[in-house]
Length: 114
Length: 114
Figure (cartoon, rainbow over the protein chains, first blue to last red):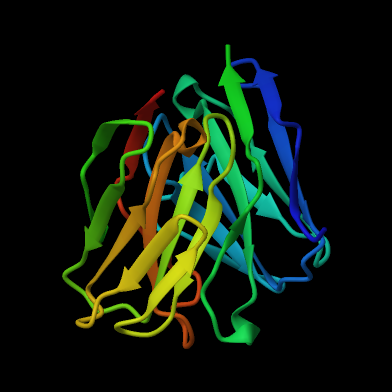
């Protein structure tokens, strides 16, 4: 089945130690998103890629970076995680070429910062 | 930022009861989406609505796109324990340059007592 995959599902890091979360998709969608979600709140968009074009949200901290080496993969890099960065990180994809706005989410990576 | 007004915030119901939740907006959208999120997982798309007035069903779920394009509701009939989770409405103006901008409601936490 076509899907969005996130690895790892659980990630523990130390305060200030860089961490990378990964996302891959078999949907062949041209847009990939990274969201941050904290306890029972709605997901908050950090940034997205439209093909290779990177689009950062205005309030996304500089501590968060992203890379998209090809259509299928996208990475979230947190350069110096703080305690406040502990959250669920969700990857999503969409295909605006189809004319609809649906986004499909992966299962998420739960990040713990010690 | 803009947010949809979703209600109720939480519901505690008995198994077998029907459930209704809704979302309103001060802005017009051309696409409304309903997601369900289980604990520790990513949101799963339940129903997508594309036309004002559209009524769509998916099993025991029924959702409608309001005629004013500023609201939507989701009904769950004959609830079962596995309906437990957080339900999010989301809206977007698909097409043009707004493809990436999902606006979310605050979520409805549903608890079903056996």
